[in-house]
Image (cartoon, rainbow, N blue to C red; front, top):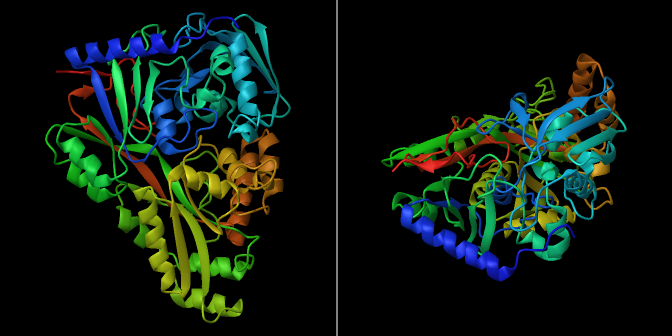
Length: 517
């Protein structure tokens, strides 16, 4: 061990002191999140929107996307000061800052911590994102503050795997090893805010990191409150009980909250794309005509209007619009109840079918699935929905327990990431290399893998386009729409940056955030 662990009594003392000071000078930020509870606070395990948003304020990566942006064109240094790559793109060397401190009493972050972090992110036993790092041959400390990554093959937008998002979050080795299983509920990072307290089904409390390398935050504590009820969150925001609110994912919410005096509303990129994944290994979904019938029975225009055309984008391809490699030149299924019924009859189901879905209780996602359920009913497709708490939902769908999976996700905006995680056969759930291929799709493996090593950008894009066409032809999944991220906060909260987007799906609360009065 390089450094001793911070004692629980000292942590409690620090949290108490921070609380008293923050209450006195008005530097407490209260956030209302649409979730009943935390899932896991281990950044290499966290997959849900509520968890990723919170962790964004606690962790750094070797690089980051400029706060307030979501596009890879805005990648800039974070823990790394600079980097170089070989001509063939297989060797990357990062020179680190030397003034990055781990939270608590875990000392300075060095190259060994980065090596440990990335190896942890690559290990399926400790990471939900191990598959993303399959091309990493080695990660080595080539100096006290220098890390060299060697790849077995080129990776499209390698830097995207090193931002503080999913496996790119850098952890402190001593803290992970000292805390063991406790790390998932008491995380230690290097970011502007430190974990202080967790009250199940109530809140997570963070406090300012006085040793943050970019400067001590002006906000001294954050209460990240779990308020699953949309109406309860809205009331708490309107009454001034909370300062920042995760919105109900509908345009009517934007229009209503914008009328609250002293409110700033943000419609942020990237959109989380809602997709209906159809398990092709389970009857009757093993018949392509049944899958095509379902596609014809879903009216995207109705779904977009249901949420609002200012806050959603209709989805056409299995890769979200705006990602590098996206194409709209794919098979499309016009809305036609008559066609849906014809296809069901051809498949031997003239009286219709019943299909089942395990689904989260998160209101924003559940209302989408209920709208799909209503549309399908007109085509004699009975969708039975079993609702479970959000963390349980993620667990069960990864156990391949659901015939139909509605998944809403944003990823680093390159086609390779989305295609690999959701449509490569190696990613099929229930297998040793599982990621999030809920449909058991395997029709585009050659194109997905070929694009990954293709050096010619035009040929690479052509392979990605062909993969999307094959996936849509087989109807492995049905893209519905992209839900843009809806947040609001009091206009006396100045985040210090203009907010156009956030890859982690939460506003950038950094050392620059402060209250103006």
